[in-house]
Image 1: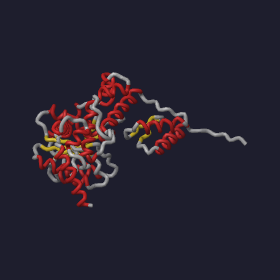
Image 2: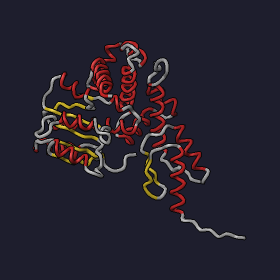
Image 3: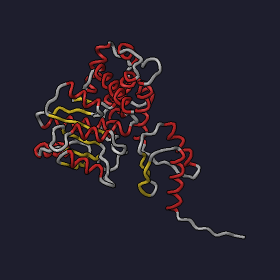
Length: 187
Length: 148
């Protein structure tokens, strides 16, 4: 017996994309034929899983090489800032250049063009975020945090923190602790 | 990754201030779509109407008639559907204690209104950029505190 089938490529394509994206628990919107907007930033590892999953259906992600480099820059900075023991002493610019095999000037220009922000700003953002996490856990002293994030002194760290957030580390810690007490009282 | 403009909601009873903010948003690099409400009562009505599109960021004046910014902030933070909205408080003057109090109650950003337009533009651009990074870079929103 022969079966004759027909396929609405639009529906089929959409369905495949949905199923694979759902499987990886990604938040997304399907914008049009073949175009997907991811509503979160996706780490390289998960992106690779998506690439693999889609390739089984012969679907390929056509991403601009520029975006790939920008994502790699971000991943590398996060990796540096979240080093278990202590951030490396080497200059981030040199580290990025050797890791990604491009001159820092090129990387920096590309990053600014794509994100409207600079690599320096992104490093400050991530370092500050890391500092906030460490402060919020209340387990390390400011001196220890300063050392871990490669600031030359606790005064230097405080100045940078204040520049980035408008608050001193002490004020930030006080606010977070007060918020916890307040929400604890409600619950 | 951002498609379409960043949605900004502004609650202020002073018409001059509203115009100033609108002009400043027009001149910054990132594309924004600004919606205006005139006081706290209008704000809460706008946010709680069925099918309302939530703003990415809300700019809230502290001193407004009918319902002031602090009361709005409390209502927003205690409302299941609204508590994730980034809230930027701004006011003409405030003591450090007052500012800290708004943070404890859940504000994300505090702006002391600057005297000149360029300063305001710079601050708004920074707020919008950092807020967007909190949306897209997986940063912890609980730690989003910024003071100008």
